[in-house]
Image 1: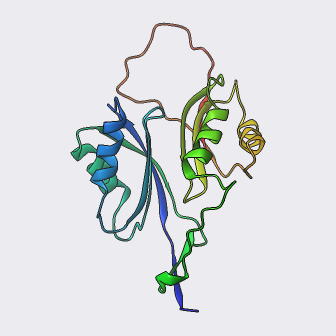
Image 2: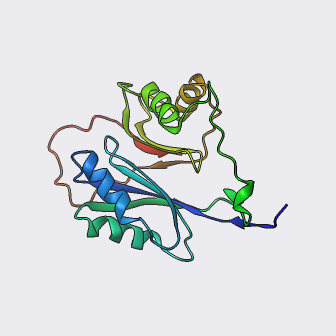
Image 3: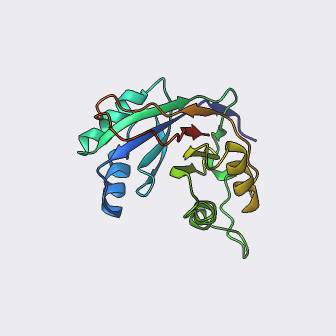
Length: 192
């Protein structure tokens, strides 16, 4: 067995505004193609999110934002998380990797579809982004309508393990004009 080195990658979530179609998501993904330090990119048009797994020592979250903005989309860093343990081991011997396709094995698209489908038309869900490589979902939701624990249960109901790692309040944008309407009492948070 060949020696391997651990990859301590950071998971950065970006809010991306201005996407209108699949070509937009492809454009953003193409912007990261060949960029040193970027492991993978997952862009969700519906949720207006990009999840980038990258080596923060080679490329920062702000540089990731700049790449998206260079593609003429507005981007905001929602958060970066570096797991304490490596996400995966990088084997020096490429022959050790096996891509087995067996009957009954779900494809990445089927997995994403089943998890994302479980949240379709669920009251209180404002945004959803999932990354299979990092085994993370980032969900923006109203805690008055759906709790973080209910989110985890919903994912488990699709046949996958889930646990709440973090919940953070969504910061309102300072540039928005104040509304004269009464506050609805909704409490938006992002749960990972």
